[in-house]
Length: 329
Length: 110
Image (cartoon, rainbow over all chains, first blue to last red; front, side, top):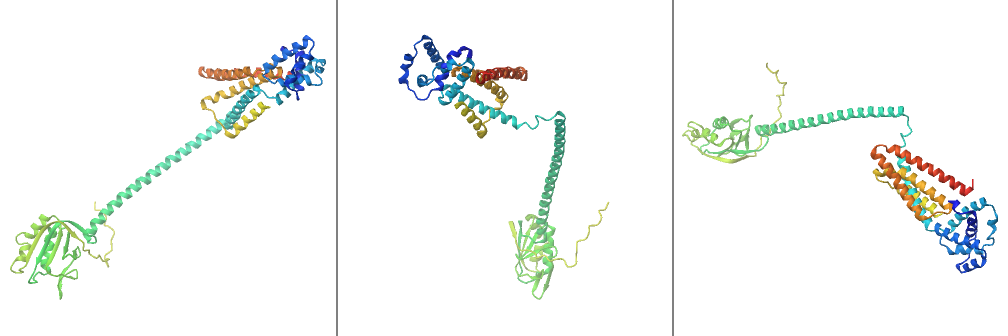
């Protein structure tokens, strides 16, 4: 408080602070030499305590007022001017000779500055709607909720589309596997794909070349009757739906391919059934081994018959797929 | 001079580094800043009047800031946070004006 220190005390103080150029502690003793009256000593002691209070520890400044040219001039001026000058002088002195207090103040101001900037930024971030009127805010909110409803609807629609597409893809996948399965089945049936499985191998030795197309057709029919799925003759001729049996100058012919002897039939199907079908009395085996033909038949059940010969399918020249007839009710 | 440099450094650092305080402390930052301003004005006034001591300054600064924050915190807990914040700001504002008047008198004698 300025009232604590009278103008009398502040006056010399100003002098001290204002004239603190040069000077050294060596000149300190002169102060006592130059202060003959007790009042001046009192002022000095007060000044020291004040110095202690404001944390200025510069003995040189104390000495400085001794060398100042006008040590007593402010004393003669009026109190107000004195006080003003003293504060300004103190300011000037603090500029030139910073003390511990100033550094502390600097640290604290640093903190305050950083915190203030932080707060400014926090405030600035959401200042957009701070000054908006209530009607505007309500309108904004309304618009936002409408927009969000619209977007939610869009999301639902897109999700529906996605699930549709996904299930569509599933259906397509199922259809494709089904078609592939059917294709494999049909290509075995049509003889356009190799096949393997359990079956029998029948070897017909025909020294008299008496086995003709009729006998062979019989044999194939018997095998089919017994559930044969794939039939191959001589490891080269695949017997399919369109296979024909005949004979010409070259002898026995199947699908326009000559059949050399001995004839080997490889059949995929239930081996036991096939063998039974071949061996029953009056069946194919007895016919071939009979006196009329005089051949021999070797028949063995095989766990794995591999049929690799293919039937070259021709494109139909005349037959075209037709629309299926209406489903009968 | 040094305090001014400190203030500038604080502002620059705050702008450049963009420090952020925890979300929990954010409501108390404005009050703490007002309390700090009060402490600063008081310190400047004391300085101009020649009664400045750094110890008192530091202690008063910290205690002002903490008490202001604690008051608002307690207010928040008991549901009168905004009212107490207003009260703190009013009281600190009055003090700041008083200090500013004293500073004005000390500086310009008017």
